[in-house]
Image (cartoon, rainbow, N blue to C red; front, side, top):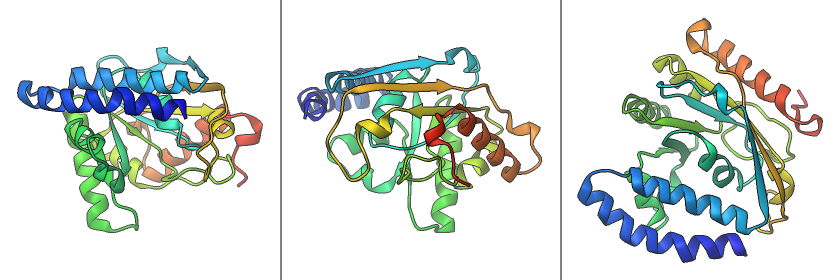
Amino acid sequence: MKLLLVYLTLGVPAGIIGIPYSFLVGNVKRLYRIAMWIANAGVRAAGIRIEVSGLENVPAGRPCIYMCNHVSNLDPPVVLPVLPGQCSVLLKKELMSIPILGRAMRMGDFVPVERGGKRDAAQASVVAAGKALGDGLNILVFPEGTRSKDGHLSTFKKGPFFLAMETLAPVVPVAVSGTEKMMRKGSAAITPGVARVRLLPVIEPKDFETREDLLRAVREEIAAALPEEMKPLD
């Protein structure tokens, strides 16, 4: 697999060198830029072309929360490198245990999320994400919580919207399509093609009375931007 080969060939040396360097200088910005370049290089090596639109919708000078639908394991390496600014990511806790990568993600203030709905763990994730926003980082979150089984937009978890209402950080809905055909759930095979990433107009949490109202607005925006075969069935 070309994508994996690129990640192993470039990612491992970058981590071995970049992690100690970042620790010594007390800054991960250079390591983050290198990691995003490697992520994008792996995707391109796999024959995936990325079309990005809506970059003008990203608010200038304000850390924001990118909320994206999730249909494939390719979504993070496709979406993350094209997002403006440095991003933290809400991701499942198990990924933090991957050698080298896990350490790099912790240094980049990525936020582990423990599955199972434990209240204390969820609150800790929100606090950590809020701190990342306060430090000037953007947040990328997949509010469905896991990949869609059939490509259709599924229900959203409430946690990311609690974060948005608590911090009042602007929300940028993101619609990704094409990746569902390139790497399907349960398969490691990659089919070359075009991935489309659409950044939609900002939604301000302060304009909503409840997180349920905000959730509904974000989900409707993403649903409207997806191809017909990916729209929610409910």
